[in-house]
Image 1 (spheres, helix red, strand yellow):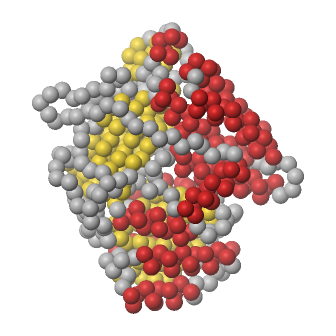
Image 2 (cartoon, one colour):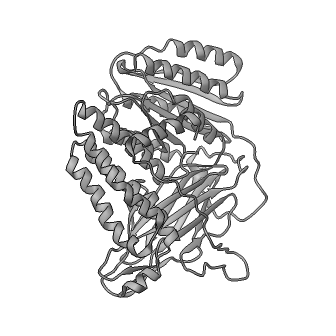
Image 3 (spheres, rainbow, N blue to C red):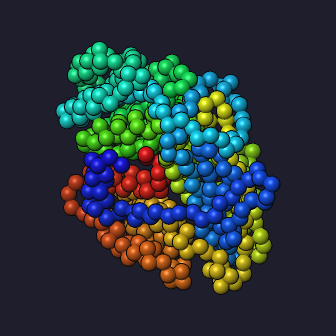
Amino acid sequence: MQPSVKKCHERRRRWLAVGALAVATALVGTVTRGKASAPARDASGRTFAASPARPVSFTGTLDRRAVLVGGPAAVRMELVIGTEAGSVGCCMPFDGAQRAQSVTHAQGAAPSAARLPTDLVVILDRSGSMAGEKIENARIAIRELVSRLGPEDRFALVTYSNMATLAIAPTAADESARAGWVETVATILPEGGTNMSSGLDLGLDTIERMRASGRAPRAILISDGLANQGDASPEGLLRRAGRAARGEYMLTTVGVGADFNEYLMSALADAGTGNYYYLHRGDDLGSVFAREFDAARATVASGVEVRIEPGDGVAVVDAAGYPLERSSGAVVFRPGSLSAGQERRIWVTLSVPNAAAGDHPLGRFALSYTRGTERSTLVFADTPRVASVGHEDDFYANVDVAAWTRSVIVDGYNKMQEEVAREVKAGRRDAAIDKVKQFRAETEPLNDRLQSADVQQKLDSLGKLESDVAAVFRGENQAARQNELSKAQSAAALDERRAGAKR
């Protein structure tokens, strides 16, 4: 995280008292495949891996190997999707025929560490509410971004208010072009309404016309308000954002200020397999641009897709809040592209049959991605299994305390924060506090037995969280303070649940 963004987040989390504890862990056990000998196995039966396939790795760790008959049916698995450092240099696909190829990578020579030339399109809201500091911060951030581009990079700027305009056509970043871009950016004036659909249409049309093999594309949408012109329906906007997923590039969204719909902006980023940022004033926009540009030019794999084919009676409940697509008995989610040296950690929650004692295969876990012209798939060498047991001692003996601690702190606690934020946004004080109490009621009895100090620390902090939530419903400017808490808390919680998503 860039320093300015980090400081901003830290200020918000201190004020709200809802920041999550960062937990760094290492997975144990390595599983190999494709050799004469049998795959190496994790003796605990909790860790699983796909065959090595440079530069991408895919592993998973269960927080427990058993559920109690008649008790909670949920288990969590931490999926870790990683890439080697210095593994850039692939050619990005740009037509459907190339993407249709499907192969399995074999371990081979170390890939090139060259940086990919990047095609970057900024889609900027210039409606009337952007006047003053917001538009000036946007101008400064775009000038900073332009200064980072190399001669092989290309840049385009789409602005929108009542309608969309291609303010800067796609052009290579030579000295002459940069000078013209700076002049153009200085003339951008805020006025009119917020026709976000026209901005998305023109911005994504632009990036798709730029597509070329060997280049990394990325679009960044910025807005400070509610869509109120054109097709302002969530369904229409999400359908547009989905073009990025289908094209195997990323649409990142940035909400600035107090008036935008944070749930729509985060949903647009999910539909476009990109990142979502909340900026209170917009003065950190330059850092967002820098992070997204650096990640784009270090792209290793695009079109990343996790596919789970659940076993009998098993259901996929959640995957760090990513949209779940269900088709023909399988569940798919798309966490976005991977950069060199990136490691994403995603907690998947599954429901396991627990009406009677028995053993339950969780199903097939696969990761697919595109690198160059090849579509590759990694599959866990072993099938994860969870037992239903009748005695508490057997259940607790099958809990991995370290993994359970991570699942509670990283996923459970932050999912609760997201739910609290939604209730606060809707003005439902008691419902928000009930979410905190529910988390305590579900977690405390387990921790009484498992004795995790880190989980206990979270439990001890819940009283302060309840007080902070109650405080925004007292005194003046309640609606504004509820809105700010909701935006800051939901953004921070989402970042914590999706560890490693923002490079």
